[in-house]
Length: 166
Image 1 (cartoon, one colour):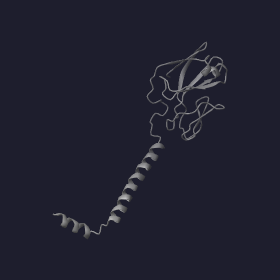
Image 2 (cartoon, helix red, strand yellow):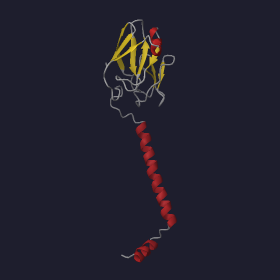
Image 3 (spheres, one colour):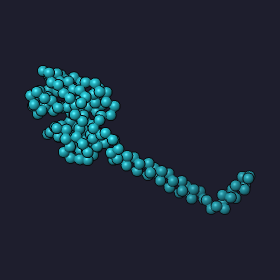
Image 4 (tube, helix red, strand yellow):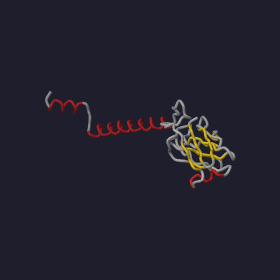
């Protein structure tokens, strides 16, 4: 088929430049909308089969000196602190001085969509992604989080706090 026959065939099918552009834009729009919808569905899907386990956890213990300025609030019962990523938990830890002899440690990984929860404010840690809230026992106060924060084993020896996998 030569070029003139091909052009005749295209002209007979009533495809105009305007129709071609309109149809192309509609197709591109549909593809973009589908992609956006898939992203939204995946972000709210709760697909993790074990949401209380930190992702990429190194598993080694972490030792902190609570006499340093960063953790000095933990010297008093009721004091709280938050750490950044570390070898035990890639999203950091929430720490709470429960008694004179005990400090609790929790993962900062939200059990809903694995976002990093904030430090305790008035005894509540809030997830910035969907608003889940946890108390100083690691329990869910407000959902959509389905389960408590992962807790870690702690040992306090003077000013040295050792946090280990549970």
